[in-house]
Length: 306
Image (cartoon, rainbow, N blue to C red):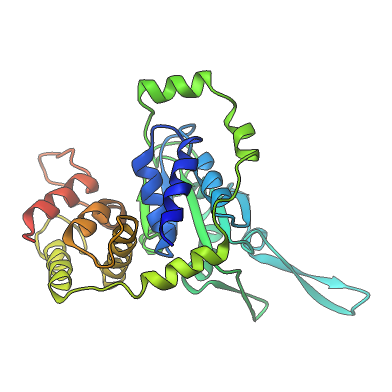
């Protein structure tokens, strides 16, 4: 069942070259049923990765460009009066899909950003007092430009916490960049990309994931990581219970792709940074330390005994 994900990873790697680790982490996030935030400078393949993942997984795909004038109704949908029916008819917005690419999410105002909260947490939206269920499976893949760039509205902590994982692609290495320069246009390649899975395959894999064995000693390790993040004085706030549930589910998905039916500490460590770094704010010291949250999470991991 999980072997199909390796075929997806290999296919996406032909489009987004030189980013095997990030592709695997993104697949882990989707297999675990989480939402994915991809943060980086413009032009490194964030949108291409999201589109290639959706197409390879055989999922319905919508893209919503987030801009400063975007309204919540543009995302959720709007009710319009229909003369023939003598009543208001709800017209679904971009949210009604299996994969929503929220492109440049931090270029929209907080009001528009908040329209995603209910959908991401409950897999439903409420418009005019009526609740509408979203298609299953439902994922948000959001891209975000660096916060120092002009025209950005940083995501609040409450919304960052809704994303199971946050990845950064970075610039390609020389060999990968040369392959991009000499290769075919990625937009052309995307159009011919076949689906290697079906939505039902993904739902079945997610159901199987919930049956994976978790030992009491692994739970002890997870709790030790959480407690250390709350007490070591490196972070403004420690990891929440929701963050730990996300970490456990991502570790399950990583173990499944490794071919195991149980989770070991190395699975937790493999996903620790992308699951927790965006949830933790580093306490800045007076010495002006340049360490970021990813560096500090790695320090935390090495400090907690397995």
